[in-house]
Length: 103
Image (spheres, rainbow, N blue to C red):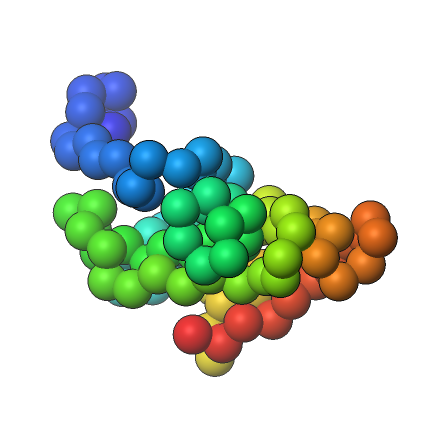
């Protein structure tokens, strides 16, 4: 949205599974990094990271996780990539993790 709340663009992402976006940050290149959950990609039930350009088009997307539920809750751009924080029950039962994914 612009500063007055008018929609500049809107898009949906995913392929019919359950998808959530929990964090979005503008990146240094005026695009966006989005962190959340996907039931459509990866093993299904994975961390989902999307890098969007300034028009909301996907530049790249990655999934991370195991055979159970994994979710990204926060993301932040760093000087050498992105850092992502979230939760998992694939690798700990249940637990939290902090992952540093350099993409």
